Length: 127
Ligand code: FES
Image (cartoon, rainbow, N blue to C red):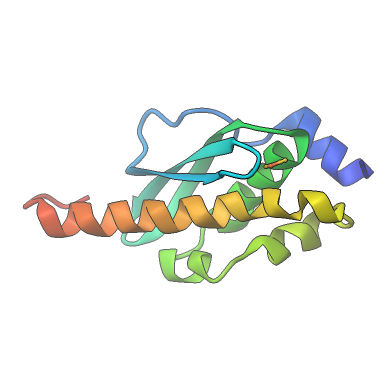
């Protein structure tokens, strides 16, 4: 495990439930059973804050923490353009068998965006 991955695994930035989240999205890998919940505070379609709960390996924690940092401050549209390769670029070298860990964040974001749009369409209130 490289130093950058270790740093994120130990410090775990943005790990935890966000009580005032606008929306939550889920991502997981059926192959290994790992799972994340991504919490977003959104205003005017922009992600003001992101946090996550992770049930998974050290790489799942590190990659998800990086993903929360990458999407914070971005519009939902721009955040949706980010993928696992962007996360791995931040962390440096990640073993081949751990690359799938970096895909749970983007998957959870797509699920959160879906939930956000559905909430906007289905309720008379602004979200
Ligand atoms: Fe499957 Fe890390 S998410 S081993």
